[in-house]
Image 1 (cartoon, helix red, strand yellow):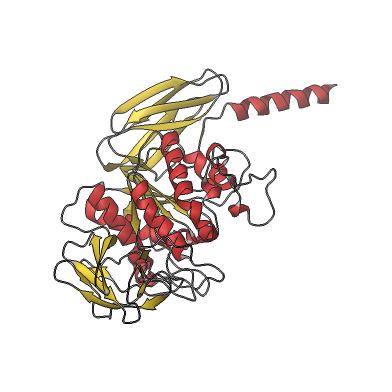
Image 2 (cartoon, rainbow, N blue to C red):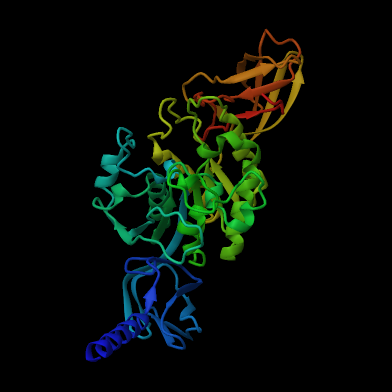
Length: 464
């Protein structure tokens, strides 16, 4: 009886001690970055009806009591960018978060081209990674790497930690996200925090919540987590890798995904728009969403130009969005282009111009606007080419033209002085349609004079 009572006493003591712990999600930790000049949310768990006091060393304090389930959430005003600061959470226990910065926070998500590390993949290098890693020490650039996790239900936490950029840490972080954040930090002169959460081969459906994805008949939500290709199943990555961050104050999102959806291009625009709208609703933040158009690659049994077209359409139909074009850096035998610096920089141009109001820079390559015919020739007009076009020393090619027979022929190209482009072929007497780089693997050669490439496009709506 003595040992029985001792055992019960020990279990009760252990349970009460465990419950009494003040807990935070992993992303509320030392080295984190909080969004500047906002009422930022911090939350966690403790014993029921416990007073939680959260104090920032910048002079702000707030408190709240836990609910019947032990959950608590506060909002505390952050100052202009700066730090380092400390944050004290006083509950059943005292937690002191150190080396906290206030600045700009961005979520970076998608599939393998976002997940690809700065040091590269096996047999797949990142151009210039050695020098970048060597010079990456920067206490003002912070990175949070989220461990991959699939879940049938929305989770509260992830595995990961905040780290300062340095040669020791930067090589294992997303290359695209790193270059994006580096450019922002360099120009804005404020701390930048990057939350990276991506999984190679993941579909857009996997990052979409149950309520939204259920509206798409083609998406089948699994009853159990499959052993293979977890990242291709609807909602599983949203639940495990994105939902935990909902509420963490952010400036915006960058997204590099699409390869896994290339066979479902016809619904991609609608899917991404619904996904992002749902994220914004849950975050209660109409944040900017900047994404990367997939690069040329020699896919089999599909023409990925249709997916690129869907992404181009998304840029216009989805409010507060923008697209970084990669037509000029594709590698036909490598689905992971090595020049990730250009990708990160091009994403950053959108943010620097649109959100940080840096004037005088271009952020988009030429975008087809309209076409008219003059005899045997088609004359094309573009947006985002105020100063005209260039091939930067290379012959502009990749244009095709077709007549009523819908047979496309390689076209000749002339850049005009009135900011238009003339396209024609001696094999087409009555032109009806023009396409540019509308194939799987084709090198983009058309730029505006600021050096940003044009997206692939077509003027027709033919099925093939």
